[in-house]
Structures are given as structure tokens and as C-alpha cells.
Amino acid sequence: MTISALNQRELKAVVRHSILYQHSYDPSVLDFLPEPTCFADLLLDQITGTITKGREDYQLLPFFYDHLTSRDDVAFRHEIWRDLASDTVVTGLRLFTSEMRDVRQRNSWAEKTHYIQHRRGIHLDAVTRYCEAVKHLSSTLESNEISSRALLDIRDVVTKYASSATFEGLVRESQDLKTKLSGVRYSLNIRGSHVRVLRYDGEADYGAEIEEAFERFQQGSVSDYRLKFSDWPDMNHVEAQIADRVALLFRDVFSELESFCERTNSFVDSTVSSFNREVQFYFAYLDYIGPLKARNLTFCLPEVHESKAIFATETFDIALAAKLATQGTSVITNDFSLDGVERIIVISGPNQGGKTTFSRTFGQLHFLASLGCPVPGETASLFLFDELFTHFGKEEDPTFQSGKLEDDLLRIQDVLKRATSKSVIIMNEIFASTTTQDALVLGTKVLEKVIELDALCVMVTFIDELSLLGPSIVSMTSSVNPDNPVERTFKVIRHPADGLAYAISIAEKYELTYDRLRKRVGP
Image 1 (cartoon, rainbow, N blue to C red):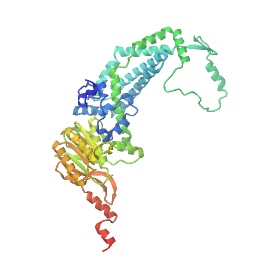
Image 2 (image 1 turned 120 degrees about the horizontal axis):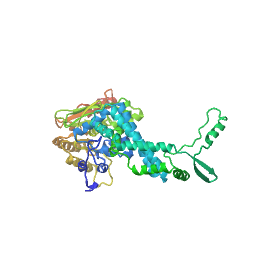
Image 3 (image 1 turned 120 degrees about the vertical axis):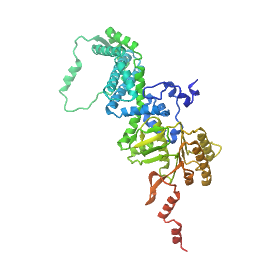
Image 4 (image 1 turned 135 degrees about the vertical axis):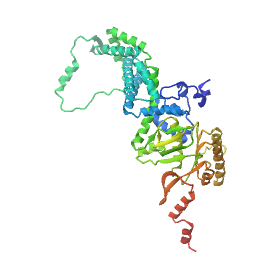
């Protein structure tokens, strides 16, 4: 079976245990997971794009595409997040990942260079940095109190590896070579375009003499005219030929270096490599929410379960919050809850009042919770769904043979066919292209089907009557300032739909009610 022949559910069956991921995976399969269709509607594509920016080498997006469906898998990741609440643990693990980034960079440099001695020198440097990274990782895990299954497992593996004869031999041999190479000293005899490479034999250091001669002319601070080198230590052809001749002069140590490089071509342990990639998932998300937490926005590890009694307090749209943070604008938080037979939230109210933002928040919360990540809010108890479906309005496609209404109907029909009692459905302003009466009839049919499915649902609508279809439906409205009805508070609260009241309030503000108009027009 080819990758293209596998659908997402089948992909989840082709798995193996990972270190920090728990919902285990085969990297060759996971990396082909498509972006979930709900991502664009919920702005999760913007969120994950920002989260993974600068970490493209780790290919983290598939981790964010593959949501969990097991409570134990979610609990597994929550344990890791609790361990990462320790500053010393985070500092130690960040040092490890920083050193591993240096190793990756040097391996990349070694592949780029055309000169053999240069390649071997970079390789040796990469090995020594790798050895330091492993020792720092082992020290961090051993010297801190950790309780997660993941970090306890990796501690056992890394401790055993760091004390193995293989690793200790790698450390000893790389350090020995570094010491021997640092003792290599040679002289250059340059005459015109000719360069001779000789063993150093006590010749005078002309560089020191020149510095001493010019030191007397120095007056105060001077500008730094030293050459700034490129990010990677390139070597030109003259330097390469000098290095080749130095290797001929010191055959023993350079032969050892050659043998070492051949034997350690693949020196990074696969478990260490996997851990380095997977921990980026946690650090990437931690770095994303850090600036939001610094603005006193709260995040919590939600209770995740199969009960449809759910709630969240002081929650917010994380994509909008990230945008507002750059503008220095405050973020409005909201609460919601469903209990007993309640399954559906119908949101109505004035335009530009935060209804769509609230619906996105609901979807973001559930998706982030299904990844085992902290979610925006002080407290949260959320449903562990099988699939999350969205239906948001989109621009009419001029190439589509029929109208927007038919497109809406086909899309929502597909959602309702695929959804189950364990699904979450979010619909935003469906059937807005038709008449109020037709929108009421069609919206009623859709909600009746959702009620029959017993799925969790949020519907944003301009049809107030849809909030009155049964006890499973909760009405929430976007509120306004009662003293100034045109001013939005962006608070979405439990409240009976009262769109007419908003219209009357606005009419009164501008003296456009029937009574006021009659007085102004006269008899």
C-alpha cells in the first residue's frame, strides 16, 4: 500500500511508540498527513504556521495535524507539560536542543565543503558538540525531579547510553583527537605566489612583533576593522592546499582523524535524535504562548473526557490574541458551559460583536486540547472528539455552476453525512445568502439532524428562532453597552436571543422609533 492510498484513519494504525508523542508514529507516514480541513476556518493554519516558523528542519506541522482520540494519550502529554513547568528542566533541555542544533549545522557544513581536511575537521567538531549535548541531557534528567512517563523513560535510556562503552569511547577518542590537533604547529614561508608549509621549529612570531611595534601609536579607542566571517567557516582553495600539506607533515594524527571520521559517519543515536525532534513540539508551542502569558492571559491543562458536559472560563481566540498582542490591544475573554442534555450553542446578536471569534475559540480549544496542549483559559473541561467539522462562509466561486446557496447545502450535507455522535461541528452564518424564511427552514433542518446525531455544535446565526428548537440548545448572544447600543463589548453571554431589542435600542438612540418619527413629522 502506498502513502497516497492511506487515509488519515489508516495512517493512525501504522504507528510505533515514540518518546514524547505517545500517539506513536512512523515518521515516513506521519510526515505525509494532510492539513485538517478545519484549520483555515479556525485560523489554526495561522497559529501552527507561526508556532513552527524557524523550526522547519524539524517538520513539526504533522504533529499538529494529528489529533489524539485517547484520554491516556492526552494524559501522557499533560505529564510532560507539568515537568516543563520547571525552569531548570526547561533550561537544561533548551541547552541540549541548542547544542544539537549546532551539531545539525556542522553536519550541514560538512556536506557543503569540497575540501576533505575541512570536512573532517567540521565532523570532529560536530562529534564533540554532540557528546556535550548528550552529557547535558543526561545531567538535566538526573538532577531534576521529573514524573512524566516520557521523561522518566528517556532518562533511563540516555543514562544507560551515556555510560555505555560505545559513547564513552566516542567521547574519549574525540577529545584525544582534539588535543592532538591543537598541538599541531606549523610555519608558512610565503614568497610572492609561492607558499611553503613547514613544521614549526621555534621561529619568531612576527604577528606579536608587529602588534608590539604598532601599539605605541594607539591613542584611545579605535574602530574595529576586523573582517566579519560568514555564518559557516568556509575555506578557499589556498587554505585547503595548506591543510593538505599540514596533513602530510603530521601523518599520524591526520590518519587517526581520517579513520575516526570513517568509523563515526553516523554518530547520532536514533533515540537522542528522535527526542531532539519531538521536544521541539513542546518548545515551539511554549514559545508561542509565552508572550501571551506575559500579558496576563492564562493557559491551563484542560480536563479531557468523553462526557459532553463541558465548560471553559476566561477563554479567548488564541490567533486573535497573538495579533492583538503585537498591537498592544487588550483581549476580551469569555466563558461557556454545556450541562445535562445541552449539546448545541446558538449564537446571535449584532454584527461585529464577537460571534465568529467565539465560535473559533470553541473550535480552537477542542483541537488544542486534543493535541494534549495547554489551552487558553483559567479552567477548561472539554470533549475528546473523533472529528472536528467546520462550515464557515467563503467567497462565491464564479466558476461554480450553481449559486452560493447550493454550495452551502452541499458542504453542510457532506459534514452531516460524516459526523458522528462523537464529533464537534461549528457552523458560522450558514444560509446567509437566502431569505430569512428559507434560512429558518434550512437551519431548522440542519439543527434537527445535529440533535439526532447528539453531536456537540456551535452555530452562529442571524435567525433568533433557531435558539428555541429544544432543550438541547443553549442561546448565547454577543452583548453591547446598554448605554450605547452601537458599542460592542465583545462579550458573548448566555442570554435569550433578542436581536429586536438591539434594533430598538439603536433606533431610540438616533430617535428613529415610530413614536419619535411621528412627533417629528407631525400630524
